[in-house]
Amino acid sequence: MLPESWATEVAKNALTAEDAPAKWLASFNDPIMVKLIKEAKTNNLDLQVAAGNMDKAWLLAKQSGAALKPTVDLSLGGSRSGIVDGGTASNNVNVGLQASWELDVWGRLRAGVSAAQASAQAAEADYIFAQHSLSANIAKTYFKVIEAKQQAEITRQNLSTLKETLRITQVRYDNGMTSAQDVALNRANLATAKEQLITIEGSQRDATRALEVLLGRYPNAALEIPNELPALPSPPPAGVPSEILERRPDIVSAERKIAAAFNATDQAKAARLPRFSLTTSLNGTSDSLSDVLNPANIAWQLGANLIAPLFDGGKRKIDVEIATVEQKQVISNYAQKALTAFSEVENNLDQGRVLAHREAALSEVLEQSNKAYRIADLRYKEGEIGLLDTLQIQQQAIAAESNLLSIKRTQLEQRINLYLALGGSW
Image (cartoon, rainbow, N blue to C red):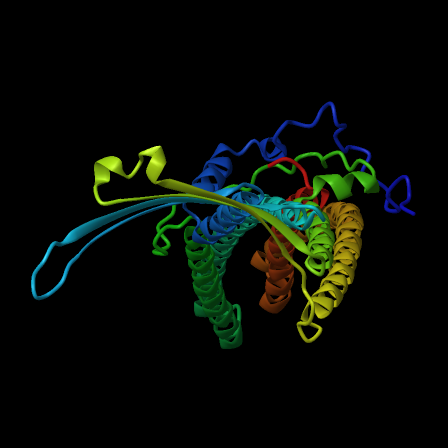
């Protein structure tokens, strides 16, 4: 039995169902990101494959429905015959119309149609979930590119500070106020920062290319992306656990696969019973095309057929057993997907709270680290402390700024993951 509410406390600033925008991504207030997601939905190749699977499934469902209707065939033939040694040659023209219709007495054909329709509905839900997953990947990759750009800017500012520190240290060394060790240490830190910038810029290009591939573009790392992460929106309405079963497309797909499996079992059971069909035909024969449709030249036939399976080596019985096993499989798959969905929601609700506390702590770390560095920088310039102590405090402040930026990006990803877990509107 499902609980009436989530075990994890929902954030107090979460939106209500009435306040939430129709499309949850709109809460980020980032038109560029929304534009990229729209582009990906049009051009992404994996999504096109999923769309093809859906279209194919619906065509198969439509095709299966043809089995419930009669089939009608028209035949037309003609010949001319005679004796080789001479004599009179004759013409022969044949026109035939044949129709047959299987009476679905036991529901075998209807079960097949229902199974195909349920499979098509599952494929459609899979396509919708593929759209949601693609939107989430676009957003998260977009955030990674922006974070990399901001991390690169932090490193450039660090480089500028280190260059100025090196200049001061060199002046002090030239005046005999410090040692060559301090100069070498400063140069080493400067080289390390340069290497970090190279690595970060490489990561930025990698993330940009990954985003371009998702967009269906050539991956040349030329995509223009903003320099600032969007503000963190309020959490979406979490609702109750039972709503997830109806809202998440992947769970809807799993439920439709259960329906398809049960109908397939009914179809397999009905296949062990006799089949009844009606047949009729009209055949016209004449020596000229103009007379072939003369009622005097047309013969008709009406018949009924019964085909009863007697012996097939146990094939039809095994078909039923296989269908029954597949029933159990899809039921277990549905239960597992539901549990996974509940876990994803609980984890993301919890992570949202954890990240909020971490952001507050890191903001305090950054504020105090910057304060400590300003004091240390003044004391170093006045010769009260050594370069090593100053650099350590400086790097602590830079690390705090970098970590805070990473947390902000992780918070944005958490919102996206929560949207996906809740099955919200994209």
